[in-house]
Image 1 (cartoon, rainbow, N blue to C red):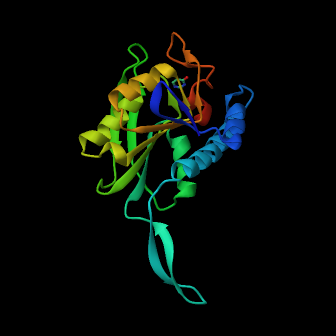
Image 2: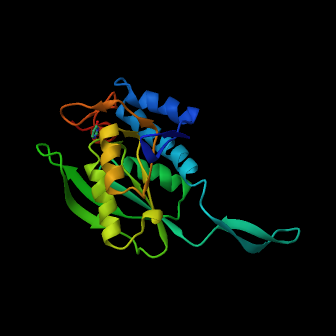
Image 3: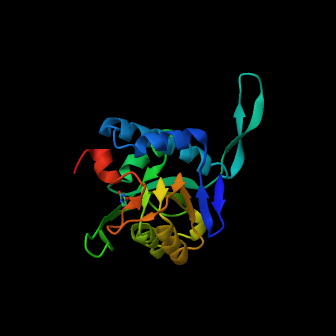
Amino acid sequence: MLNDPRFPNLFILNHPLIQHKLTHMRSKETSTRTFRQLLREITLLMGYEITRDLPLTTQLIETPMQSMDAPVIAGRKLAVVPVLRAGIGMSDGLLDLVPSARVGHIGVYRDPDTHQPVEYLVRLPDLAERIFIVCDPMVATGNSAVHAVDVLKKRGVGDEQIIFLALVAAPEGVQVFQDAHPGVKLYVASLDSHLDEHAYIVPGLGDAGDRIFGTK
Ligand code: URA
């Protein structure tokens, strides 16, 4: 895992398998089907990394040989919250890893002129004692990511209960996110170069939603 001195709460997951899959996702030759499959796989791998520090407790079980205090994840239950629509492509991989997780949805689209997020749907599981993994592949301007975390925090969810998982981020967006939510950890597979004049990430991978769903 890499850090960037500019962004204390940004963690770059540089596992070789994650980087290899991301390269294939970036290529414009990659089909919708393969892109979707790779996103699922890469999210599972990223999910494995970001859940590394989940607290464990023990539970008394009986093996066929004897009883033992065996490790299980402590108390807090996980919720996966994709930011619609592209976040849906990531939630499948996370649910492969944690099939019992609850799923919330936050629907935000980016106004094409102002690039500001416009919210159209919020559906969340009960909030008590949960860890929320909010996922959206691209942190470009950072506005949607900030908005999604605002939605949770306005309902009383604490910084330490939220993990933001993205695939590719631009420094501009990470700065916006960090200024708004300095206590929320942001995990990405790559911190790219910059945003272009249309607020697309360069080199990026294009429009993640269009590439997942095969739209234009
Ligand atoms: N959203 C995307 O899907 N891609 C970008 O590059 C920026 C925002």
